[in-house]
Image (cartoon, rainbow over all chains, first blue to last red; front, top):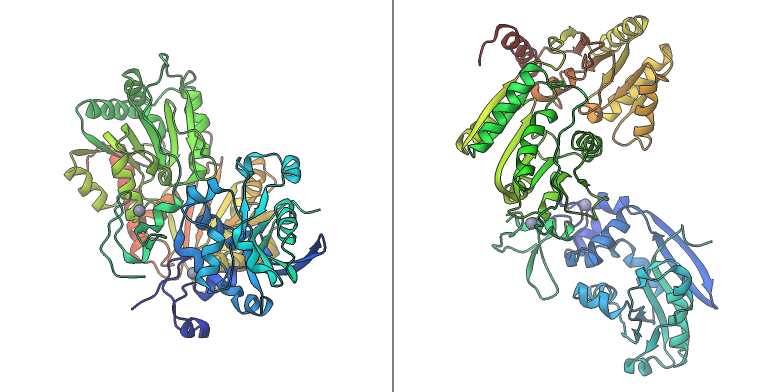
Length: 205
Length: 389
Ligand SMILES: [Zn+2]
Ligand SMILES: [Zn+2]
């Protein structure tokens, strides 16, 4: 059966080795080339965060189509390119997705980060909860900084003495990340690192 | 991709490659989920003043067509207006808009291209000073209701069975042309009647409208009443095409005229520009990829440049005084008869300089070029002799 790129809808040519091996994924090589790789890392509150790309271009559009326009099919295309690297980075670790507000999850009908981890069979535990009532977007940036709204839930105890990776899609002010770190520290995991798909370069500095 | 029979209720698409499955494994249309957004609600306006204000009166011919459009609409006919480039198509529907508005009916003006929406909105505001004119396009959509809606064809998905009169401009332009999804979305937004505007309608466009309770009206006279510039074909080989292009460009610039040089692809454009710029300074190259496109065009209008090498991005919309047109490699398969007519129509649009020159340069005098020249000749004859096609 013919396969089409989930991003540009063009027919996928079977010249690309990985496409042949992992036949269930569907992003063509020319779309993959358009994704700008930008590995970088920073340290926040003693926790190292790894970024894969900048919040820009095709990858940004793909993420927006996925989580804002509910194009569920894109869940396996966003990280596809980075997968070999992620598997190395997360060896012996358990992913903990940074939670969005309940409102945006229920509006969307799915938890976008959990679905990405699931489709790539990355080990995760949904251990954090976002208890803020207002949508993040509507809060002013300075208010967001002080808004500690992330708490652990009953799944969190399974992470004791484990190496964990806090996982998010976009890093903007870092406030959500910091409050996730503070929450997860309570069950004293063995190690905490971060993996965030895209860095919003205009908001850092 | 799985094989499934599912038809999108919004756009009518049933091609499996555009169908996805959501978390509950239900099919959804991947084209329309991108068009997600609020749908417009049908609100009755409380405006009562729909007076029309025109800076320039319509020409006799324009007035005649405008009246015909209105009376056909009153009789519930659809209309295709075949008007040559530079005829002043937009103004033709003002009278009809006024008529519909005064009856508290919904009107809209749709075009495939966003820059045309941006261009036309202030013109509608000038013509209907007391009306709420709202423009809606990709990254500029927050208000969806108003007296007059000016919008891209993509945005029509917000309006279901909504418009008592919808005008669709440039039906022959990308991305509307040949796009089934947009055509379905357009069909669905119509509640009453529609008017199509085109400088180069295809024979299937004409056939379709006649089958859909419609009529074709022709306006082959430009606003300033002069003939359409008739293109001249200049034959050359691969290398001499470059030299001939340089020769005509030099000639025009010597006469103090502005020039657009159209090229079929970005690569050909770049190579031609690097050649021309060796001999003639103060030009530039524009393509859809150039970020500073609008800036370059602005500078051109102000007279900083005397020529621009461009891809088809400037094929429509831009009106510049005293403009001459060269089409480099007019025999390239990228050009069809319709696009050549459009490009030729860039020349001689202004009242002050109604007689522009158009040069087609190529290796082969092919059928599309021949057809384009014959069509333009025919328009001029009809206009001058009052013949009806
Ligand atoms: Zn692709
Ligand atoms: Zn659809």
